[in-house]
Structure formats: structure tokens, C-alpha cells
Image 1 (spheres, rainbow, N blue to C red):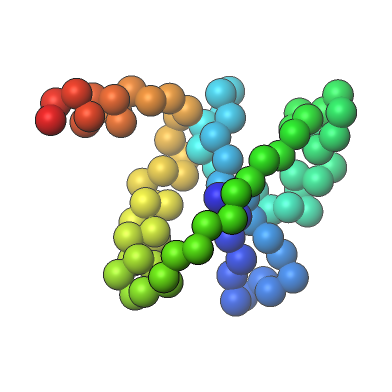
Image 2: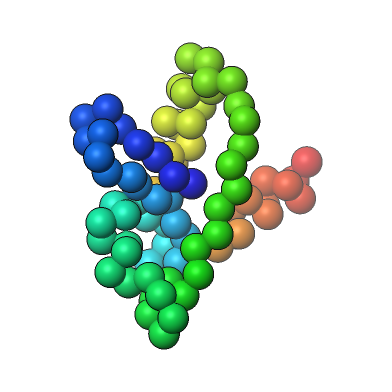
Length: 85
């Protein structure tokens, strides 16, 4: 996920999930040094989606980010929620 904040209009942030570090929020200015053939990020793939940015959607996104950032990488909790239903 790519984010931009009003407080830093010239910076872009990435939400990424890396096996050895988990889910994190990183600035592009940090990631670009580690991007390229033979580096930590050999490829970066993204898709643009069109969504209505309602207050409800922004609130849900903020909640998701608060819960996700800092978590270990894995599908464990998510899979448990799916299979319990």
C-alpha cells in the first residue's frame, strides 16, 4: 500500500510485509536505496485502485493500519478468522 500525508507532501510511504521483519511503514527515500537487481527489494509491484474516500473508509483504513503495522508477517490470525466462520 502506498500512502502520502499532508505533513510530508514530498514523501511517499509504503506499507510492506517482509518475512523477517513483519508489516512496516517505510519511506520511499529509505526503500529506494535498497531497490534493484541483487538488492533487498528486487521488484516492487503495485496496482492502482479507484475507491471513494469517504470518512468511513478513511476511519477503517486508519484502524487497519494501527492493527497491521508492527505485526509479524503471516496469515495465522487471518486464516483463523476465516475458518471460524
